[in-house]
Structures are given as C-alpha cells and as structure tokens.
Amino acid sequence: MQKRSFTLVEVMLVVTIIAALVAIAIPQLLRMRINANDAAAQTTLRTIAIACEDYASANHGNYPSEFGALLNSTPAYLNENYTSRSRQGYNFNCSAQMNMVGYNCSATPVACNMTGAKIFTITTGSVLTNTDCAP
Image (cartoon, rainbow, N blue to C red; front, side):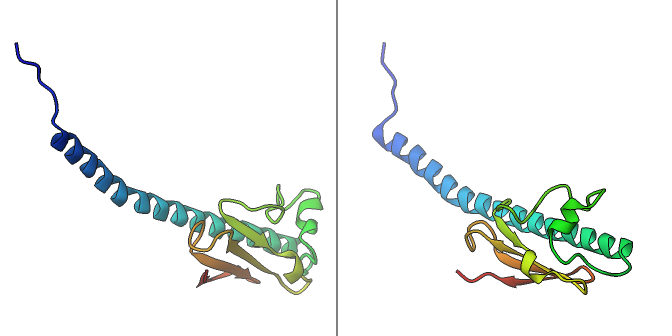
C-alpha cells in the first residue's frame, strides 16, 4: 500500500493562489468600508441640517446659536450630540459655525483616505458639498 501526500510544489502553489486572492480582496474591502463611512457622514450631516431647519421653523426663522440648543429643547431636535466624539471614521463640527441666521457643519475623516475619502460640509438650507481630503 502506497502512502499519498502533497508535494512541496503543490503546497506552495496553493499558498501562492490564496495570497493572490487576499491581495485582491483586502483593498476592495477597505474601499467598501470608506464608502460606507462617507455615506454615514453625509446622512449624519443631513440629520443635523433637518434639526436646524426644524428649529428655525419653530423659532420664527431663527437658527440655533449653539449646537446644545438642538439637544436641550423640549422636545429635543436631536437625540444625541454628534459632535462629542468621532463616529464611523468621521469627526463632526458645528459649534463654532452656528448663529441665528444660519449654520455650517462639517464632517472630516479621522484619518484621510483610511476612514474617509471626502470632507463634507452642510450649510443653511441643507446644501451639502464635499471636497477631496488631502493627507
């Protein structure tokens, strides 16, 4: 009875094929993650803009002068403070750009081209713009 086993060449061929598949798959997975983070950042900014517009509607056209006004109203316009920490690879900033005549909020990737590929900005009237992030 003869014993069958794999030769070193066969094992090396299988390892090479697996390595090639991994080299193709990992960058695609990272790109999908960045795209998901970009979409989540846009959605979060739209949520903030809707809250600002609702606030203005209820307050004779005056926008909130600080982000906390969206959280501390009864009922609250937002259920959470999106600017308190990074979320899905993005940092959100509104506080310095809010006043009674408008708002300007931004979402910046925590690590450019690693957690997000764009810098998003939403301004009064829910106008969303983006620019490429530079490392």
